[in-house]
Length: 168
Image (cartoon, rainbow, N blue to C red; front, side):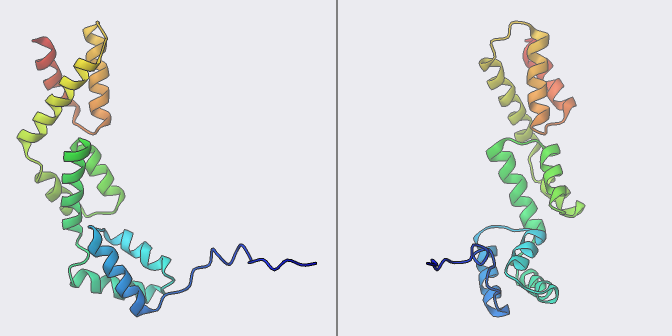
């Protein structure tokens, strides 16, 4: 007695989208949130398109304003700074991982206001100081500095603010 079952490998093979179907689908994908070129390129390949179709669609998306690396970099940097409290070093490294051009990275980082940046470091120092039960000032400073440097803030800024806050 043989049971008719679906081949488990068939579920993994996705149907190849036509060029027009992919165009509509990827336009919607890009309109939902800011995307960078490599992300969109990978998505297009996942639709089963050939390299020539992928590059043609990507240039269409760029010319129509669906994909804009500068806009992506600005949104990414602003969001990570405001919401996750990341420093410029971490933001820059993450943008480099995504193959964003150095020009776009610098433009995005320059949009972060210096006053807001320093205020964020100071606020993070304050919150860590209130949470820490460490009595030793040297150890406390080191723990806070390590935390802020891991979050991507520049070590010289971190130490300057730490010395100002803790020496008071």
